[in-house]
Image: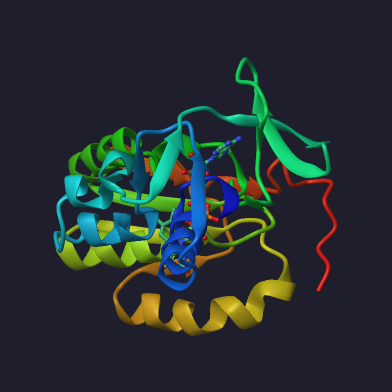
Length: 222
Ligand SMILES: Cc1cc2nc3c(=O)[nH]c(=O)nc-3n(C[C@H](O)[C@H](O)[C@H](O)COP(=O)(O)OP(=O)(O)OC[C@H]3O[C@@H](n4cnc5c(N)ncnc54)[C@H](O)[C@@H]3O)c2cc1C
């Protein structure tokens, strides 16, 4: 029996576990994750677009077979009797033959919007506003803002929707170009200027992502 401890039940951790239990018969899998459910973040724009319900994006770990879920946030790594371990603020060390780190990135800023209740709150604000402006104020462009903008504009064509790439390095132009033209075709304005505040507008600040503290000092090797 080989014991594998996976830290983080986001898409990376969950997909890793599903492949592991499919391919390895004698694996004992332990998931360390502070939440009770997997939240399928990538589906949030689909919920905004009305294609799925918000509740359909939640998958409780209790329903997962062959996985032992330990509900706590990992805070520190260690090596004990030659095995990699992880411990929480109050939780003692959990060790395995393998330790898989998948805690995602550290989200800064309006990160609450990417939680189940936060996504609903964002949706309520978006539906109430006449105009929705996504402000990308940081170096990294991403985190689904363009997909949310497509979803909002498609579902509510009467709303003004714009994306403001206030501070995004030209290094990312190759990533941005394909979706900028698609956004403009859909009636979404894309600009590098910050928006001015006007009555009836809702401004969404896209969160910044940094390396997770658990993995920040680890070197990635082939
Ligand atoms: C609206 C939106 C749309 C997106 N659309 C796409 C898309 O179409 N295609 C695409 O490829 N990507 C998309 N992304 C990006 C994608 O969601 C992320 O790249 C992906 O979720 C990263 O997965 P992850 O498992 O690495 O991390 P996360 O999804 O961040 O999951 C990390 C998990 O680890 C847990 N965790 C955190 N800290 C700890 C800790 N200390 N101990 C234990 N557990 C911990 C968290 O609770 C969470 O469950 C989108 C993002 C957003 C917000």
